[in-house]
Amino acid sequence: MPSTQQLYQLQQFDSQIDASNKRLNEIASNLVETEALKLVRKKLKAAETARRQTRAFMTDLDLEVKGLQQKITRHERRLYSGKLVNPKEAASLQEEIASTKRWQTKREEDLLEAMIALEEAEAAYQAAQQAYDETKSNWKADQADLLREQGQLQAENTDLSKARKSTTQFIDGKVLTRYEQLRKKKGGIAVAAIEDGSCLTCGVILSSRLCQQARTDDSKLYYCENCGRIIHIK
Image 1 (cartoon, rainbow, N blue to C red):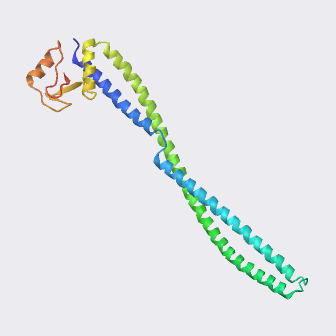
Image 2: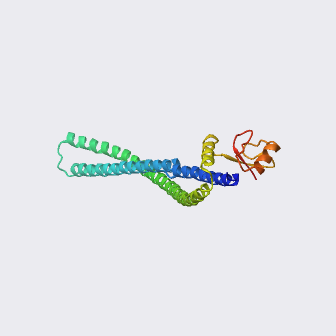
C-alpha cells in the first residue's frame, strides 16, 4: 500500500489541472467580441447612417435651390425680353417669379440648417469612430493577452498531465479507483492535508488517535472524521 504522500501529490496535480481547466474555459468564453465593442460599432453605424442621410438631404436642397434660381432667371429673362405683349400674362409671370423667390428663400434657410446639421453629424461620426477605434484596440490587446495566457496554461497542463501519469504508476489500482471516486463525490478534493491535527479542507480538528494512526500506519487509508476525505499528515 503506498504512502498517502503520493496520493497527496496526485491531488496537487489534479487541483492545479482543475484550476487551469476552469480558467481555460473562462478564456474560451471571453475570446469573443465584448458587449462594449458591439455597442460602439452599433453607434458608429448609426452615426454613419445619420451623416449619409444628412449629406444627401443637403445635396438635394442645394440642387433644388440652384434649380429655383435657374427657373427665376429664365422667367426674368422672358419677362424683360420685350416679347410679352399681354399684360395679364406678364402679371402672372411676375407673380410666379415672386412666389419662386419666396420659396427659394425658404429653401436657402433650410439649406443653411442642413449644412449646420451636417457639421454636427460629421462631428458625431468622428467621435463615434474614435470611440470605436479605441474600444477595438483595447479589445484586441485583451484578446492577445488571453491568447498568450491560454497558450501558457495549455503548456502547463501538458506538463502537469505528464507528472500526474508518472505519479499514478506508483499507486495501487484499487487505491487509485478509491481516490477517483472520492474526487467525484467531494468536489474534486479527495485528499485533505492535516496540519497540527486540523483538516485543512473542512477545518475540523481530528482526534489525536486518528492522527497517530495515519502517521504511523501505511497499511491502509484513513479518512477525515468530518468530511470523509483521505487524510495526509503534513
